[in-house]
Amino acid sequence: MTGHRDRGTGRSTSELDPMTGSGGPMITAWVGWVWFTAILMVVIGAVDVIQGLVALFRQHIYVAGAERVLVFDLSGWGWVHLLVGGLVVMAGFALFSGALWARIFAVLLVILNALAQFTFLPVYPLWSIIAITLCVVVIWAIVVHGGEPARV
Image (cartoon, rainbow, N blue to C red; front, side, top):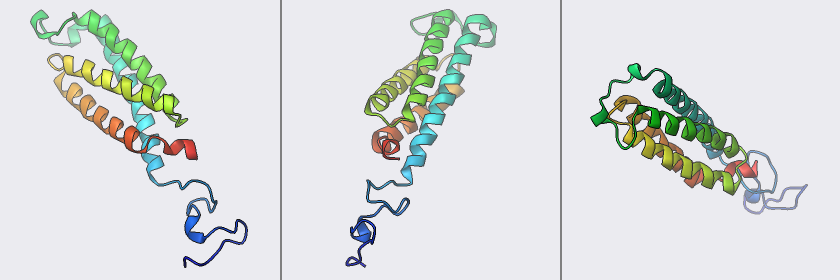
């Protein structure tokens, strides 16, 4: 089959993208993972915003003494989660473009979010562990396959 040529482009059929039939860059199924990652970032950021608002306005929901919170009190961490969460939501939407700046911005914010969740472990351990795990998945998907949405 390597000798067959497409009538429209004159290219070898092995050079054509199987999804679009065009001679442009090949789009793989991994582009779905990147879009899933972008949606996941929006969800993670929204949960972080809610977590921050709860820490600011409903502190009694978190069971933590002053000795269990690292660096800041609950109000300080509420502001951190609110800010980081809002930025993660924006980075998730920007990731749909597939632009290099959006991928770099997203990876940096997800690393920052993972660190914030790590310091919040004593206060809300289950969600913090889930969030850190999701951050690792997001970083992997962006670094390995992040440029594919730009080709669509």
